[in-house]
Image 1 (cartoon, rainbow, N blue to C red):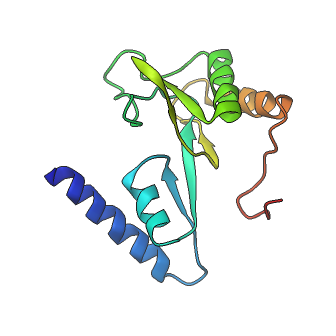
Image 2 (cartoon, rainbow, N blue to C red):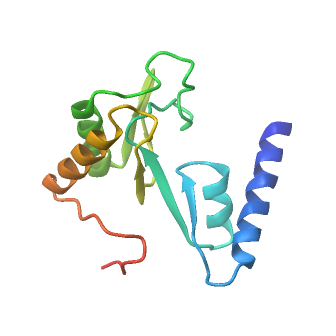
Length: 141
């Protein structure tokens, strides 16, 4: 409980600092984290992020890289997983049923040797599935 409280306090402090800056800058936060929740709690703009090339645990956190299956290197599997997520709002996890996450952004880790190919295939797959991709700064509608 102490760690969760510390993380919440850090998230609150980060959001307060960003909110104090000029320009009403949004926060980019991993979906389901304390940072995302802190921004939403005060009505601050937040873009939620999911990962194309990382596996999730049932609690919504990323599988630690030290564990098998943490990295998703098969681009076709990553694309299929993201298309399914976009269509259902549910992210597959290791050892459990899919979980609900929000997503405004998809991250591909640059330290993955297939990162550029993965990013291209994710983009192509999402567009092919009818998903509209746009910059955060473009108006919704």
